[in-house]
Length: 177
Length: 426
Image (cartoon, rainbow over all chains, first blue to last red; front, side):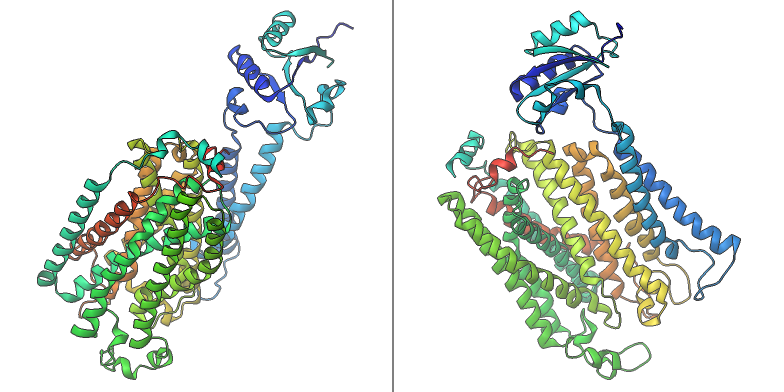
């Protein structure tokens, strides 16, 4: 079968080499690609041209949803569905609804953050094509990799390979899907 | 530790650019504020001016306490990123001895001029609502072991003594380390922090109780010290941002501060905004829910007059305290972009400093009452004396900071964490 490969993987020996190669790939305009490093390389997100995560926005939506849920829950149960005077207080007041709304704000924010992070990262992921690469374990030890996916609109087996080679990548290999 | 010093930018080997002209300007402004406040004695009377002066002194004392706490917290956690800005807080601590001096007029006026000037419980003959005096008030008698002239004087002296003592220990160790690079100073500071944090926590709590809360000594609130603590730290962080942006724009901090320093202090500001709101709301909510007259009168005084009409303080509470002190800074500081853009972060820092002042006014000024027992409004001639007091005390504090600024390096260049701080990252 001559199915399209998943992408190309290139090996780099040092963090600076990977860093500059990442800048080259970024400047070439690729979007579907990634770096694999044994440890966090500071500043790599910038070299890759990554924007800040949108998880905080998802968290904010979760928080506002939680707050409104708390307020409307207490308003609806206490002042609409089953009117009940407790402790001589009004049927509804944002004062006594606040602690519950506040807790729900935190709970929903936490849910939104965790779920948002999982979804954006594509987790849980039980299989990934780079795992088939026989050298990939060295990415947890002393070697750095750049993977460019074939689904990237700029991907072209020959040109992409040339770009990686020019950026200093070694052992450039095609990954099976 | 010379390797760390070597990693600091070369410009640091020179002494920081002179701040002497700015210092003398600040002192002039401060003295002008003090003179204007003194003139207020002839316009609005001693009681009003004394309360305004109390606002001014507690405001700047709160900022200084906040700086003390930030330095202590820095050392107890062996923090790294805040090393480059810690030095500015250490300079700020130079204000404590002057604050002690500026508090003195309140004590002298109370004991030499009029016992009933500010704190009603210092005058046993102070007549209460309903005709009886403080000396015959059962609630006072229950608290008399705590609220009496000897305790007030002794505690106030103890507050300033412990703050000045802790500050001088922290400043001496940090400044000497610049010279000899000895690591023992870092350990020395950690010991000061372990010792100083409980002392600072207790003194600031009791200071808030003696100076502010006892203006209405009938009242109960176990949150009061925590409320004051939250304001202290928020104020110090905001003042720290103003200093950071000033030194950054002046060029001193070029190559030293990066985006992440602003992000980190912005995150602390957000955290303390939430903390302040949690504490302040808890105090209000518990009193609202329990609905006991001994507690609710404090908020009633700040909402309605004796005839049931809303007074100014109600709107200050809603728009100044609830929205101004919480919602606006909270939503503003949620943004990453706002936190990392220095001049935008400075904008919210100035705002927070202004609402902290409003919060102190909200807590202190309603102690001034008219013949019906209603709180005197804030927006009146009284506001002028509050502002002159804040400028008066502030000018002296800023002068003390700037004077200290020239006596040490811009950043603690031989601190073992300075390298980490200079390369602070997320």
